[in-house]
Amino acid sequence: MLYKIVVDAKNGDQDAKMKLINKFMPVIRKCSRKLYSEDAENEMILFILELIPKIPDNLLRPENDGKIVNYISISVKNHYSYCIRKKMQEKDKIPFSDLSEEQLHLLENELSTNDEMNKLIQDDLDISLSEKEYKVIVMFYFEQYSIAEIAEEFNVSRQAVNQMRCRAINKLRKIY
Image (cartoon, rainbow, N blue to C red; front, side, top):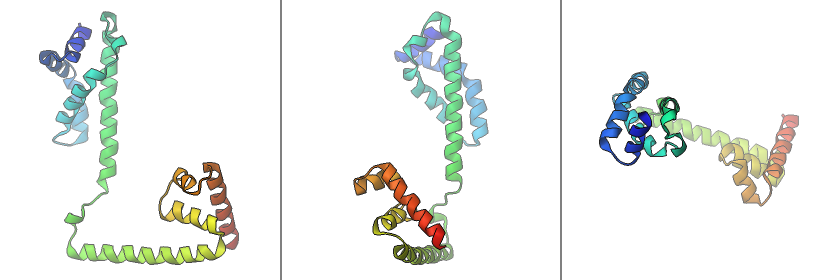
């Protein structure tokens, strides 16, 4: 019976989509309550609507109703986990518009102090390391390039970049 509703929903039947949403409403409500967001339930419903066309055709058989329920339930729970991770990442972010003038000033001072400190560290590294080692360390640790990006920049393998980085780190350990 469920497979027929899913097939109809995949073919664009609005009533079938509503039946499917109503069938999974307990899971939707449970997950949305845990998100503590006024839009969570609507987001979960939208997720199910986007999931319907993605349900594999090989599941759409009369004997697979249990597998279909399992597929949709697990997908909703995975989406819930994704929403939690996203919410955790955004938790620590504060928009600049929410900061006062004094807070903006303090932030600017802190960032400029960090820039000066980074410059001093880089100058010290320049003296201690070869040119390539220095560039690898600066690009990786200060400019946040990935190893693959650095390898592409130098036209060498990722392994070569990692070896340069390790050599530089070992030199710095011996010096400091």
